[in-house]
Image (cartoon, rainbow, N blue to C red):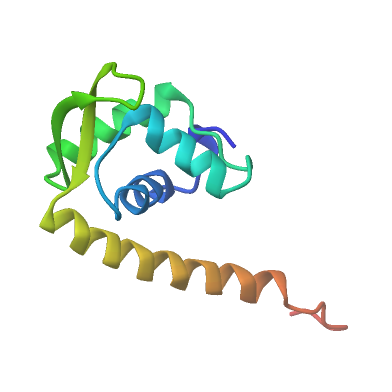
Length: 114
């Protein structure tokens, strides 16, 4: 699923979740999301990097330059305290949204509609 097809705010939530266990560089964030979702969610670079920059401007992420596992220089992003709080809020919001969508999808067609 490309970034543009994601429910508004979902990409932010996925990025925040990917960083819950520690800093990662952009490519590793995209790879983690793809692997955890078993390939169902593939975030395009054109969606991922603008989202990372937006989250950093919001104060939810900070960044620092470091070396990747292949010894390449890359920008690593990590959650700030504000980002951790936002992850908790967004996780609750997503659960409520998913519950509402599930209620609609599991509704049975009644014989009479108004």
